[in-house]
Length: 116
Image: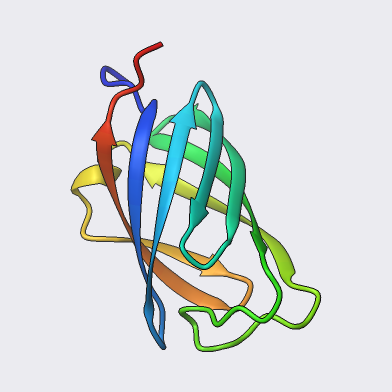
């Protein structure tokens, strides 16, 4: 890949019952992020033949209403998803994520590069 994936990203999320927003950092194979509902995102990515293979863990706080229209229980919830980002994922209208509680569409926008 000619351009670095490292950077700060906005993730605009849409599910069957609502919308959300998350901030993510991709840096040297690691992903970390948070959203306004208190969710935490931790994951990794590796370069693949057609883009990037991503493993993403999501921790959700107790009693959180999700964009899919369900609520986490009193203990919160966590899940892990595997997805593939095409090399041109920033120009795609959305990325479909088959999450634990239902499908989520995510539009990723790169906000800035990292200055390592």
